[in-house]
Amino acid sequence: MKPGVDYVCVGVGVLVVKDGKVLMQKRKGAAGAGTWALPGGHLELKESFFDCAKREIMEEHGVEIRPLKVVSVNNNIGYGRHSVTVGVLAEITKGVPKIMEPDKCEEIKWFDINKLPKNMFDASEWVIAHYKGEPLG
Figure 1 (spheres, rainbow, N blue to C red):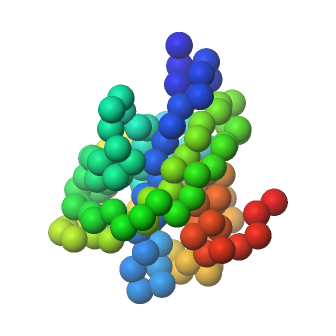
Figure 2 (cartoon, helix red, strand yellow):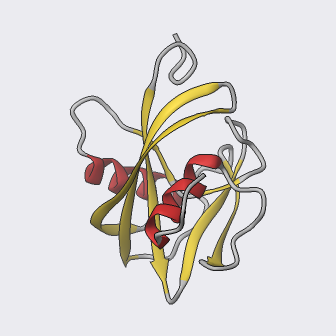
């Protein structure tokens, strides 16, 4: 069985906001390849949302974070899969983000939270919209 294809999987999107900018990565080699997304990944068995956020951002970008709060929970059906995404707001406490998994991420960039890229991963778009308090469609 494949997560999100044969059953619903739970993911965590890490929303790191600094000076009005949000950290995003361009996906590679997975669902939504070529779209901009928040760092994050699948929740492991018996793992908390905050622990997942810490683990995923360390694996993907080599930084330590302090999770602050859950900002959203979304039901996402797209890219041929089904997932529930939990958005976690966090701040970087140590390190500078870099690409640690080049097979999964082709670029990282800080975007102005009010001038986001057009080609966004749907789950990340929902997390950011919830955080900003925008109406959702």
